[in-house]
Length: 172
Picture (cartoon, rainbow, N blue to C red):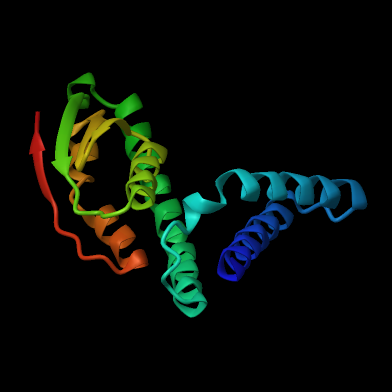
């Protein structure tokens, strides 16, 4: 019970810190709104973020640091994908080659798969359209976008949570 409370306190602290950083408003109204919002989210989904409570807080801290690093890398990939989509929008229409890409993932937990699916969808030119077990179906706007599904993102997510990952990708 005490460990659950500790994890919920950690989740609340992470969410509230993110709230303060992103809002940039430190007045009483906004801080109170942040406490209420973060408290509600922690209460509703606290088990989702850290469903496996066997890891120590030190391990979770290292995972949090790796997650921050991953978010920086993902932000850069989003910028690069935006440039590619911009080129597609103003380039020859023959460069557009929409396709569905199917691949198997070796990510273990639902949270890891959730993170991968959202990372793919956040990257312009690709949208995760379905996940069936360990099989992902992704719409890619071009061959270049499809080639970006080479397993790098999955490997980086796997490294956050220290689970081994390999990737086999096939086109539907």
